[in-house]
Image (cartoon, rainbow over all chains, first blue to last red; front, side):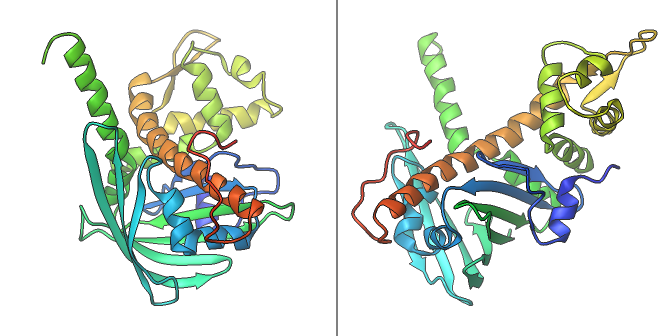
Length: 183
Length: 123
């Protein structure tokens, strides 16, 4: 099988692809060799600002959860050996949902955060996340998030999981059923 | 199955291949047609096609000389739906992060009272 760019990237710990590639929107890749998901995204910010947005709990809560309600950070200790826990809340006005995640910070450094990540709905599953903040030298910073899952099954379950979108799709379906008189 | 999933995900990770697949959703194309918009060799396009073929995403029909490339829509729809939904959720988060970062630049205090724009207003 043809080697894809992901293999190079994962083996080089997420160093950038090439100077000309730009990620104004999130790019995602499922690694064919290991059960990993890569995400790349460029930000108009310095590495220090991106780091702060990932480690300051108040800033983190503003963007990690859905736009309407956001995340409730119940535990946060952003240091080597510390741990974290948060609950993401959402809803579309008819029914709210709530789901929690927790993990441990392994490395917390200006250019790199390594942590474990568990969804409480699947408590035995644990992914190892490595976030790197790469200074692109022109006021922008590239985020590379590598999530290494413990099996291909878990990885593909993550990729195919619906969560928020699934809930919304469910309501859209219900709307149609109500409209055509099935309910 | 997982192997095929992984091959499909990997095949669609490349922007040129994604673009080729997007064009194939409209109609079958010959290799020459497919290569036309790109500033790359026919050989490079053939390589991309091989990756898509190995992943089961496209097939080459036996139509004399032309051998048009055909998208296997069923495989494509399922995989792209999954990966695109996942990507979109990540992008929604990152758009909110854009807004947080912009507010940090305006008022460089980590817990400042700057109002964060709502999702969807970020560039």
